[in-house]
Image (tube, rainbow, N blue to C red; front, top):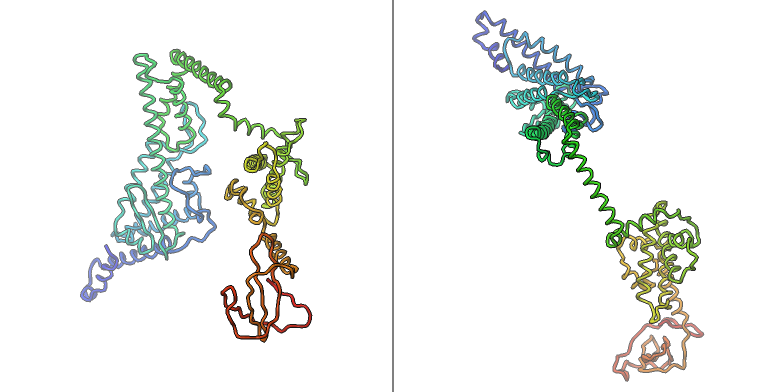
Amino acid sequence: LELTDLEEIVKNNVLSKVKMPQMKTVRNVITLAREIKARLENELLCIEFMSTDVNKSRFPDDKSLVGRNGDFLLYRLTGSEIYACLRERLRSISETAQRLTVVTQEKLAFQWLVEVFQWVEEIEKAVTDYSSLDGYKRTRLFIDFNSATRILMKGEDIFFNIEDVTKEILRAQKISIRLTPQRIAVVVLKGGVANSPGAHLLRWGALLYGCIKSDVDRAEDWEHRASTAIETYKSFSLDGSISHLGNATRFRDNVENLIDEAVNDLTIQNEEAFQILSDLREKIECSDLVKKQMKIEQVHIEEEEFQVEIDRYENPRNMAFARFEVLDSILKRLPPCHEDDSDSGTIFDSLNASSIIKQSGRDKSRVFLEKSLVKGMETFGIELSQVDARGFCSLFAMNLENAIFDKFKSTKETISNEYRDKIRSLRFNLQDPKNPLLCARVLSGDIKIPGLIAMSSDELASKEIKQMRQQLKEESIKNVVISPSSQVKDPVTVDWGSRDISINEFSNSSKPAPLLSTLKETPRQSPSPVSNGKPPVHIPLPVLSSGVQSYKS
């Protein structure tokens, strides 16, 4: 019944003037229905539970009843303050609901919440930590497979058969229940109270349903694999053919893994299948035929491993393939390098420390390049305590030096001047603390070795050095001394205020031409074509001071 219909009956004009025998009962029903509606909203769905409960934190996933940290998730709900408060409020409202002789929409919604709560309590009762299977001492909580299957079916019936009227009442309180064949989701919409006792119960109920479903699916998969192993051994027992087991050692290990999985990983236990597997393991250990076959397989495995070791150490091709592993093992055995300002402490020094052969020029170049790369790494703040960082710099320096030598080597396979200049330039720029970007681009592979070698000194230099070079270049141009005896060609007449000055341009010769040649003052006249066919250039002349004038290019 709807509460509004009952209220309309009482307010009816005709019935209010007639004394009805059951009118007192109707009024009593309306009073109780109103009380249930108010308490459902104020005590269960619309009021936030004020406490410092751990369940206010983020909800776990629904993959298993056992959480990632090993906690049994059910006890996170049943051991909380809000769960105890929920039990007390449901018991109190149930007393009022029992006195209500009719079923209203609010009473129907309340009864559904009670069913969800009783279902959670049934899960708690099914949990046990005792088992006599095979003498195993259980340290984990688990649920019997048959009980878990029954609980899962009951939960499915409760959630998936919810009345539409109950959904509408919950929806009015901003609680949405979304049902799919895969899962149940309870969502508190905007404006709803997520930490109310009723919403808390529904969210945990959907979570526990998903956890039990996942654990039951995992238990069914384990049971299928256990049944396969049991049927395989039955076939072997009937005719005594070891071929049914396939690989006896692998079959024995499979049985052991199934038992360990049931003891340590499964929350839902099938005790009957577990007992059969335990008996099967004892039969395997007592079977002479199985033990004989396992010995044969063990000898075969040892022979294969021995042959692999022989191929590894006697086959030159395998040794060539393993050269990088050998180099890595050598680098790990080297003593730690000392960091100082000298050229010692590099991996090349460590390699040559046990040798009495003096370093060649190319070896020194590799050491210089490695030292520069290491200092570049230190500029970034990279930790160099591990050998791998220095090993990388050493190998990179060796490849870089080989590429420089191949490009600038002379015909007699000796070190050329270009080789020395390039090594010196790279050594300076790679370790320049004011130019860390260059070293970073080189080590990260942004600049490949061929491109690095092809870069000029200006391209390698930092911005500060480039600006310094530009300033020096401009100052040198300012200080050029003009030679009056230089040859001139193609005079150009310059109109400069009140007087004309003839400026001669210089021919392109192999020698550096002076910036400015003879200046000759001529009477002012109208512009006229010059001998080279170019019109005169008119440049405003600044106020000339007495003495010698200096001109820029």
